[in-house]
Length: 262
Image (cartoon, rainbow, N blue to C red; front, side, top):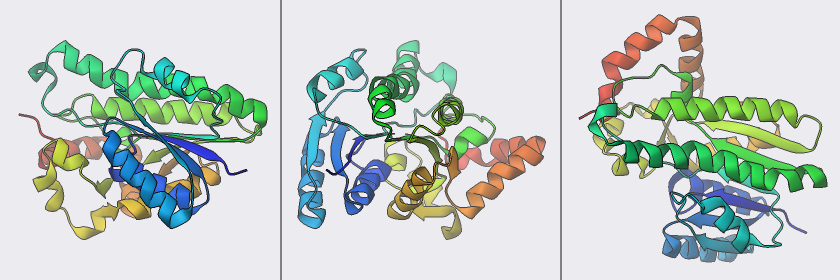
C-alpha cells in the first residue's frame, strides 16, 4: 500500500512542488489549503501524471480549531507523512500592525505546525514509520532585521523544534527534518510585496521550486535534522555562525531589498 503525505499550503509554491515530488515517488497525498479549487486542479494533474490518489481539504488554518477540524475530516485515513508548509510573510515593522495581525501570524506559523505534528506523530511512531518536514527558512539561521519582524523568529522556532524532535525520534523509523530554503521562485514574494527586490538578486541566489522540493525530500529520507538548500545559502548560514556581527551588518544594510518595512 502506498504511503500518504499530508501537505499544508499545497496550493502553490514550495507546497505544490513538494506535492509533485512526492507524487513522483509514488506517495498518495492529502492536500490542504484555503484555495480549494487550486487543490482540485493539482490533484487532477497528479492523478494524470503519476496515478496517485489525493484527498483535498479546503481549510482555514487561521482558525483556532483548525487542527481538530482537520483531524475530524481525516477520520480513519492513515497519514504516514506530514509537511507543514503553510505560511506567509507579514510585511511592515512590528508597531505598524495591530496585535490581531501578529496573533494570527503566530498561530499559523508556530501553533498549527506543532499542534498538527502532535496530532499525527503518535500513530507514525506506533507503526514504526513516518516522515515529518517543517518548512522553515534560511532566515531562521540569520539575524533578525527591520521589517517582517516575526518571520525569522518563527522560522528559528521551527528549526529548533525539528532538531529536538529528530533526536527524540531517532531509531523509531520516523524521520524529522527542517527544510531551510533561501530565495525560491514562487508567488510568495508577490503576496508579501517583495517581488521587485527578489527579481534584482543574481541568478545564483535563486532556486527553482521543483529543485528545492527534490533536495528537501532527499534530505528527509536521509533523516537530516536540518537541511539548508543551496551552497550559497549554506555558506551564508555558516558565515553568520562564524561572524555574527558581519551577519547583522549585512542584514541591516540589505534586507530592505526583500523585506518590506513600510
